[in-house]
Length: 171
Image (cartoon, rainbow, N blue to C red; front, top):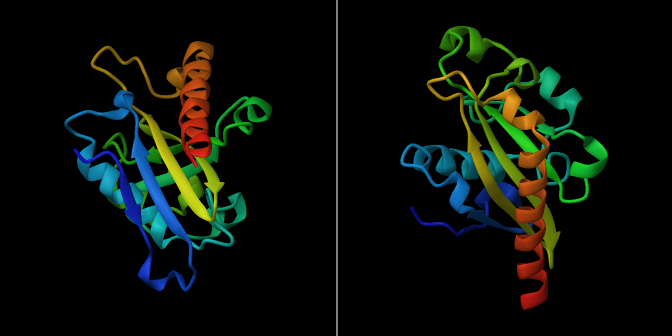
């Protein structure tokens, strides 16, 4: 899988560029297609109003621009996660029927499978760093439990900070 992808959305009408990177934690054989859809989702979103994620109000009123994705939220604890803009994006995982998922607005699409990512802007470039691909394993572990584990949050925040500083300091 190619880790770094740089995109300039054709229909954005701005000079904004996007950089997408992925950490080794998220590298799994089943993540490649999801990664490409994540890039499509972020580059098709409204830059002024929906970066790094659409507001709750927008998510309550509309479906996601890429149907496989659901709620896109700042992770908890908010005060700590806001420092590195640590978010989690729900991904359709077949725990619900597709037709039920597809009919709901983005905010009501919840699952136990997530993309954990961080976001920052530097020199007019929007950086998204995918930190982890969290799924429920065969033992039923993962999902929301992973989001609530302090060790995971600490590791994701440290990894996000290291990545951000590597970009900022290299300029």
